[in-house]
Length: 449
Image 1 (spheres, helix red, strand yellow):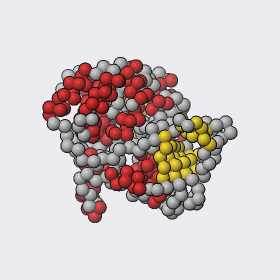
Image 2 (image 1 turned 45 degrees about the horizontal axis):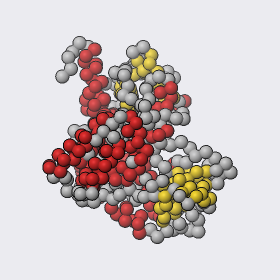
Image 3 (image 1 turned 90 degrees about the horizontal axis):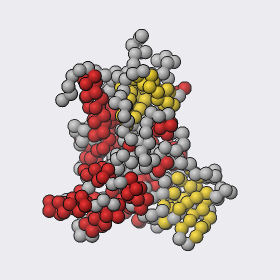
Image 4 (image 1 turned 180 degrees about the vertical axis):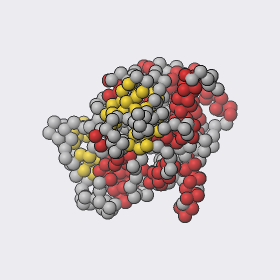
């Protein structure tokens, strides 16, 4: 067996921030391991997800710069890197910087990292004795031979699940807004100011599309439609809860066993204290609180409170929110969008149904957690193949029983509630590598520390 054909010690599947965090953790904790990184399609993998590429500076992170470092041992690493490598940008703590700068940081962190990168989709993952066989699409080979690579351990870092496509969508419906944005010419957009643009959704991608259209010079009407009809809240200073209030909050939450009880506690405390401080106080315990709920109660949270939680938990930069509110040609309306059998875009709200006449419709409904295991995604195929077990909520998967396989990030939604933000990604990456290492030592007859 040649060195090229020898199995890798670890394969990381996924090219986004979760994959980057896992590659960095592997190099820090297991520097002797031979590492394979399957980064996904080249057009996406080289940009570390579309949201972190491009030339626009108006597409901004919704988390302060000092909290976006991917190194678990140095969580302010992104801020330090910007101050060191780009002093002219004059970044200060609390600033919400460009997503493009975060993509540059990811690229810089990986410069010189000893890992074999492969681009291309992973078609399947199969156990072959004690090894994992990674079947790559035909564009996933790089001259290293025709055989599928094999690895002793695999970390799945698959990122946010895509939503289901809209049936009967007309030609002017854009299912992948970021792909559409990347394909635009360097200047302008193919729209006239008497055109109307429909943005389906009101989350962070919808905000980015609105800001990007305005930056490119489009001044026509933009109608954003989402079930809640509200933008995310803005960040604002909020003093942490005092120790006695925090203790009272914890005690009340300990007594909450249903979704109704839990929401009642949060509303009670948010009516008497700054709501941002109340939400922030839950961050460290959110996953434990979530796990303590029965599955039916978890479903009730997702059905009745998930949208409101996201609007308050995932806030945007204050000046971004102000720009949206100041845009007289931008409207945000409650309702649901569907496409009828004739390809007409229909808005349904409490007043009935209305056919919308728009020049462009951008689908920004966000990640499809409720459809994560539908369709032909790699995650769905791995569940159908028996490699992974679906979580009862259907939003993601359980932690694998096989000790040579780990799941990092958004695919764990359901088992965990907070699982896609940078602090969770860097911590999960470290946990996976330490677990892999402890299993290896135990197999070798060494008692792990």
